[in-house]
Image (cartoon, rainbow, N blue to C red; front, side):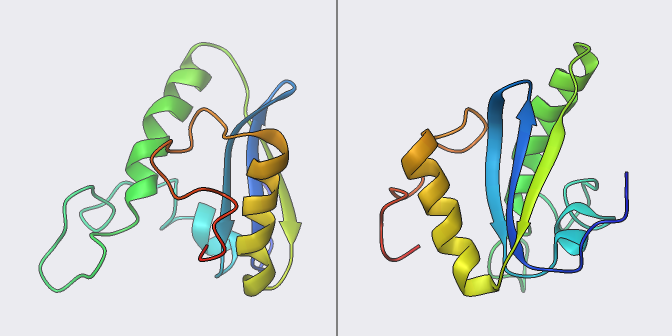
Length: 119
């Protein structure tokens, strides 16, 4: 993988012409996708809440790794598109993407509406 940007922003995982997942990071893309991000499933990055943790880890890591690995094992590729912006802009840009293009298949359908101003 190439060196990832040290910026906050919005990212899209795509295959061919289809967006598979859209997300935003208020930290850096390097941290979100790097060694402690999507690329690693650890005891912290589990779906279960852990004692002393408020959110049970980065649950999206576990949820997205399975379809991503299946997609790659089926012989498809995944491209990463990233737009750097400040953290406040990233949340609204993610929502704007979903409003314009719809909810990608790997995003959760039970998530708040992308036009929800509380995002």
